[in-house]
Structure formats: structure tokens, C-alpha cells
Length: 165
Image (tube, rainbow, N blue to C red; front, side):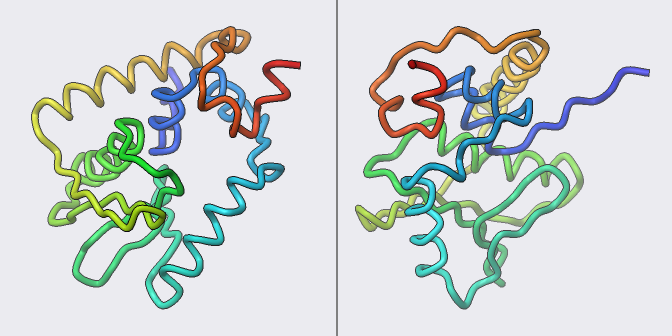
């Protein structure tokens, strides 16, 4: 019997930003706890939504905040909207929808720029998610991590020294 691959929203984000990071993280090499930027993001999250329902884990997804009005909020530390962030949140809606759970709205919130973006599941986004999920499965089937490709985002990544030293 074939084992079904476990995919969560963070893996969607990692596939779109760095397949090396996705492979390492998915294979138990987690360096996020060593990153001051990750810790800053956690602090922002805690301070912004201290009275809300936070860190909800349902099966394979971990949502930052779910409000009583069925509003999902994903908090991002960055200063600009990114496709990887949007598809991570869209994946939450997709995941719930596939399990018959509907009626949620999803938002990306960037506190550093005080902007919130609503994310909806369109046919185009559903197609894009299917493509990303296929790419995740292909990446995770590799026996070794993909060769890292140096990008600007690498400088703040918890895996920087692992990849480039």
C-alpha cells in the first residue's frame, strides 16, 4: 500500500521559496529554532493576537489565528505580499474544503506594514496549488536535498550556513 504524503501549508510556502529548505525540513532537519527572525515572527504573532484562538493544528495544517467569525489569519513578518505566503493560506482553505469544511475566509496579515490581504480560492489558485503539491511530492521523493540556489531570501534563512558553508 502506498503511503500518502503529508503536506501542510508551511511545505507549500517552502516549496515556493526554496525546495532545499522544504526537503531538509521535511526530513527532520529543523533549524528554525536557531533563527532570530523566526523568533521575532513568533513574538509578533503572540503580541498581536493574545486574546484570540491561536496556533490551531488540524490534521496537517497549523493556522496562526482563527477568529470566531470563521476568519483564518496568517501573520507574516515580511514587508511585502508574497505569492508563497498567499498560497500557504490558500492551501488552508483548500485543505478544509477537501474535508467538507467550508465557510472560512482567509487573510494574510503583515504587521510591519499594517496591511491585510484577503485570500480566496479561485479556479486559478486551485490549479496552482495542484501544481505546487505535485512539485512538493517530487522534491520529497529525492534521496538527497536539491542543490541550494542562492537568493536574496537566503540571507535571513535559518538554513543559510547549512547550505552555504
